[in-house]
View 1 (cartoon, chains in turn cyan, blue):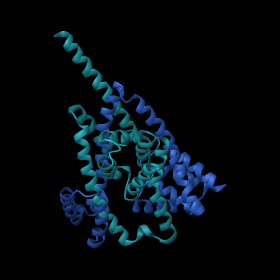
View 2 (spheres, chains in turn blue, yellow; view 1 turned 180 degrees about the vertical axis):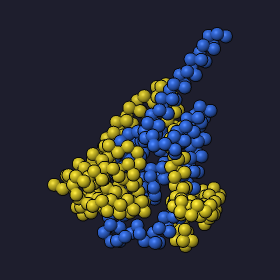
View 3 (cartoon, one colour; view 1 turned 90 degrees about the horizontal axis):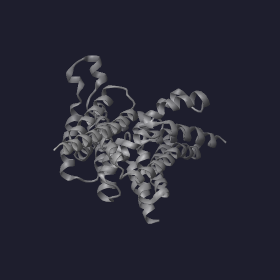
View 4 (cartoon, chains in turn yellow, red; view 1 turned 120 degrees about the vertical axis):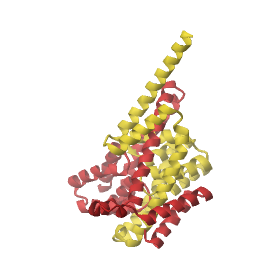
Length: 187
Length: 187
C-alpha cells in the first residue's frame, strides 16, 4: 500500500512539472526513478522510451505505465499512470474554469520562455548522460546519427525510424557474430 | 450518456495516437467535425493552454475538451479514456519484454533501439532550443542575423547550465527558478 502511494506521488510530481512532450520528463525520470528510487536503470529507461514511441498512446503515459508495472504489477502500472496525469486534470480544470485567456497572459508567456530555456538545458544534459550508455560503439553512433538526421530533416514517422533501428541492431550484430565465427574457424 | 460517448471517443484517440501529444491533433479535428462538441477555434485555444501548462499535452487537451463539454466529470472521464488503451497495451508489451529480455535477438534489437532513442530525444531538445533561443519568425521578415538570436535567453541558458552542473539539485527547482527568471528578465 505504502509503495503504491509512493509510486503515485512520485509520478504526480513528475507530471506536475513536465513542460512539453514526454522527452521533457526525462531529466526528472533520471533523477527520481533512476537515481533516487532505483526503480529502473538508465538502460531500461531508454528501452521504455523506444518502445513507447512505437506503441499507441502518449509517450509520457506509456513510460509511467512501464515503470509502475515493473515495480508493482498491473495495479502499479495503473497507479503510476494515474499519478502522472492527476496534476494535469486539476490544473487544466482550474485554469479553464477561472482564468480566461490564460495562454495569452503576458506574464505566463514570459514564465514559459524561461521554462523553455531550462527544459532545453535539462534535456541536453540528460541526452549526454544517455549517450554514454547507449552509444557503446561506432555502429551505435551511426544509428544514433542517422535517426537524428532523418528525424530532424524528413517527415518519416518516428515509429518507422525506431523499428528500423531495432532491425539494424539485429542485422549488424548477427553479421558481426558470423564473421567472428568464420574467423575463428579459419584460424 | 455524453460521458460514455466522451470516454469512447478519447479511448479511440488513445488507441490510434502514436508518439507525442501533438499527434492527438488530427483526432481532435475529426472529433470536432463529427460531434460539434467544440469549435475549430476552441482547438487552437486548447493547444495554447496545453502548451502553457505542465503535463503531457495529449492529457491536457483531453481534460480541456472533456471539461468544456461536460464539467468536472467530463474533465476526468476524457483523459481516462485516452490513457486506458496505453495502460492495457503497455502492460501486455512489458510482460512479453520481461519474458524475452534474455533472448539474444531482443538484446540486439535493444542495442539499436537505445541508439535511436538517444537520437530522438536529442532532436526533441533541438526543437525546444529553436523556440527558446532563436526568433525564426522575425528573422524570416528582416533577414538580419542579429534578429535571429535571443541574446538574453542564450546568456540565461549558459548561466543556468553552469549553475545546474555545479549545484546538481532536483530538476523541479531549476524549472521553478527559470519561470521566475523569465518573468523578471521579460524573456
